[in-house]
Image (cartoon, rainbow, N blue to C red; front, top):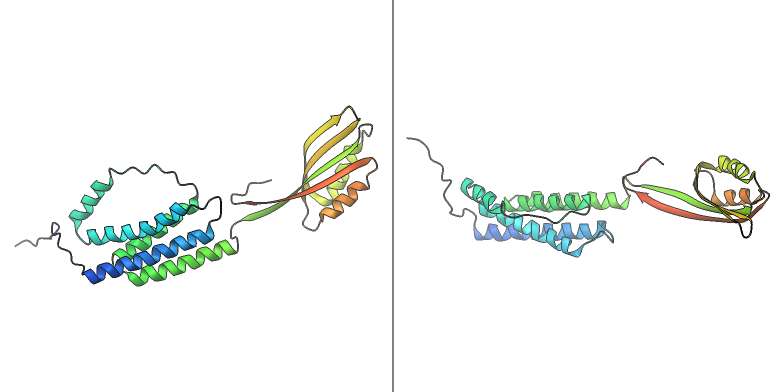
Length: 232
């Protein structure tokens, strides 16, 4: 006699107690994930509706897994039902996708009854996520300066003298703007400077002021982060 498998058996094997405990674990995990999202994502990337969705996603995933159980028919039925849903909301940041998978994974663990896996996994991944954000892991902070100079238009060799100063203190200097004010016979130039590590901005200003003919010197520092650094 062939052995049969009850794939059409829709009787729940999970007790009410297990059901409620699994949902409670999923809720705790979802709240923890939403809190980590709140702490690790800052304005303008933060979305309160997305944080709430993480909590609900963990709960719903756990319920779906509890409904399916080990029944193959329910699994195929769920796939057919979910295939009519179209998600058209674009994910703004890669980090949002990570939190979605995080919430899904913990909801799955809670749904199948692996409560300690869900709780410990949530705690461990949350700590790692906060630590990575705290130490700014993977980010490159670059410092550059905007130097604005003015000199008389009759100084024809002024740019060569300025370039000598840049060679001493800068690893790279890019001319951003050069214009001549005919009314007052004055040249205005703007450079983007990337200083050497040991060079100080005040040294650059002092050295430029020593160039004969410089009438005005203005140096502005800019600091910015690059998540995807490109060669400069």
